[in-house]
Length: 238
Image (cartoon, rainbow, N blue to C red):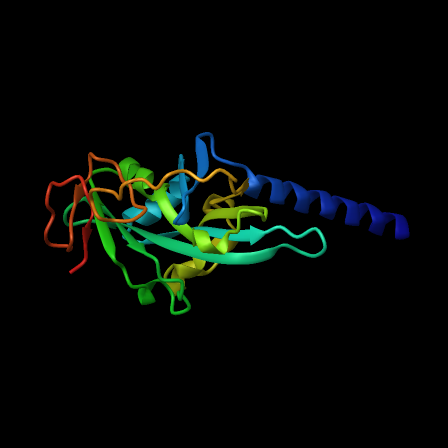
């Protein structure tokens, strides 16, 4: 009996390790970098998203999906656990619009998502002609400010723990039942990167006036659901 329980525990541990390894596996195309300036620490990244067919079918049925970028900055300490200095998140809502047959990505920097996806406040919207372009917009960020430089002394060592995931808790309540146990819905990428010690000169701000947002130039910007102007930059919600 004891021998059987030992074998079972070993198999269970191996299964958990394989699952954790699968969750941490990076997509084929994945880039992540940090830029440290006299003013702030910026994160830029892009990856390739290839959701399963069941996920695309849900989108075509007008079920919105919520993708979350998260970056935690830590100060390393040899005498104790690392101390978290800052934590920032940004949520992107991807939805299909059947009437116009277009895809819409909405950006929210609101961290208080306890009320679910319906409680998020969106600052920016972007419309796309295809799902591939919309996914490229969701999976890319440019010069995202994750910390002020004043919080990162040059004589200390810091690192960033990064996470990108499909947040199933923000889906409509009836749709959440049973989804969490399906492998097809498990979209998550994690990484850890050292904060560079070299301080680069501050660059000029983006011409669009939008901080840390870069989306494909082929897409057209829109400020409201009814107005879709063919411009390459995002427009703030009015």
